[in-house]
Amino acid sequence: MHTHKLILVSSFVLVLCFSCKNEKTPEVIKKEEKPAVEAVDKKDPVTTLSQKMNNQYEKAKQDFLADSTNIDNIIWYGRRTAYLGKYKEAIEIYSNGIKKHPNEARLYRHRGHRYISIREFDKAIHDLEFATTLIKGKENTIEPDGLPNAMNIPVSSLHGNIWYHLGLAYYLKNDMKKAYHAYLNCRNLKSNDDNTVSSTNWLYMIQRRIGNEDRAKELLDLITNDMTIIENTSYYHLCRFYKKIIPIDSLQTGKDAPQDDATRYGIANWFFYNGNKEKAKVHLQEILKGKSRNSFGYIAAESDFSRYFGE
Image (cartoon, rainbow, N blue to C red):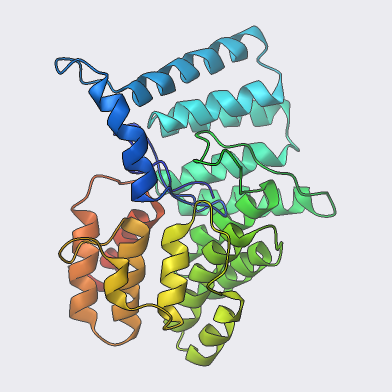
């Protein structure tokens, strides 16, 4: 779920998460970026945040080298490597870890996520499906954040992230039935409002894609105006838009500029299943012009554009 909040911070940072989690709001990111940018010499392209990430990577690497059998060391070395955009290296770290810990669900959860990043969806599905068997009957646990949110409160869990990423992988393969099942399992964890809005967003889009508008509307019953959202504000706004609580214009900043890829993809999808394919195509193209190639919104837009508008 991880992760969408990382998309806009720097060129090193990933996104959305769709653990059952996602991104920071643009307002939060701007507040964090401004002091960092001002503190850096104009000749130095490295921001304070990216330097911090590199430092965290080096520490994780040293911890791993000190004890390469420790499961937490393996996971954090892989995560810190992936945060720098080295997805194949991260996958190799997780794969080596699986040889030592073949029944550790966390390793399959993280490797599955990174298979999505490199567009190997079948491998992601294989890992994440196996992870669901490993967590069956076990207590759910909170998953710590790689980059803590503004409130420093983790909002995703191991079970939630497994089901969330599995749902996404199936969605990207256009297997809507299995995607729906996975996201429903994610939402049924009832861990927090962030989890509810992120999973509901995908559940709604899935039902609209398969032409079941009545069921899609029913899924919005859990969405209210008094929810406590720490991270997934884009998904929350989209769900309220679907429910006709807020207008489409409120999803945008400036002139026809959606807040982020998650929002842009939600809007593109809305036009698509409401019959305006040309407008959907334009919005998908706008997403694909961006640089956040590993946000879930971008990957979904890429998949849809190839499937429906590719030549």
